[in-house]
Length: 347
Ligand SMILES: *Cc1c(COP(=O)(O)O)cnc(C)c1O
Image: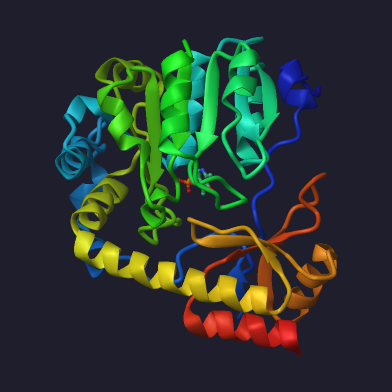
């Protein structure tokens, strides 16, 4: 007999991830903001040296080796850090801990399309609030929603736009709920909200190794916040939410800052080139502080551009969502990948 799921699950749509072509397909993949460079060699070393016991035993449920590495890097205490199975896990844990059914998750709109999905799973409501002109944070609008939790992606996706620290501070000061700043791309931006942690107990920052550390396949993210928030999140997370190898690999990645910084420098400079080249071709480009560019082709027919690029084996992201259909989101790749993209556009 068919069993009915919870009502909120039956009526929700589920998240639509970007296409992941089979590994055998030779495509240029600029559609899911993966990093085009390999992870630090120190990470690959971890996997070369796996021993049977690493797999036989349960991992450290708290991932303390990672928490200590992150604490040292950011000048925080271990108790201010939680590790997750990707930062999506951190977002989910935060809502499970702080949002009751019927309560409101607010966020500036458009943004990461996973947020409403996670709220639906909690049978919570969402309040999308339009960005103010110039992609400024709609502080008043967000506060007016009476939300319990506010998510702000900084830099935002799919626009790549940063949020001014002063605006985040103003929001955190006046908000009596949990403010989660999703910093999935912050290593490529000019500034982070990290400094708010010293002054605002209601701020939680989520980070990921998927983008800046070239480890999307590893599934490792983390949250930074006040020790009392982290303690609540630790109660809610799956007991072994990070596997033993991912914890070791994440430590290795975080500790190789020299390598990471060299990759970020390459992506920043290629981002500038991509933006300039698109503008030369008449595209409207929103200046990005992430590893992607959200841009409108001269025709405004983003669906056609997407399809044309796909026929050349180049994947970019097209959002068939009201308000977003005139632009494509292009991940910053290697210089050779940019060249191929531009050749296909010119062809
Ligand atoms: C990619 C992304 C994430 C999450 O990535 P994980 O792979 O789950 O760590 C979170 N937020 C935004 C805005 C993203 O683009």
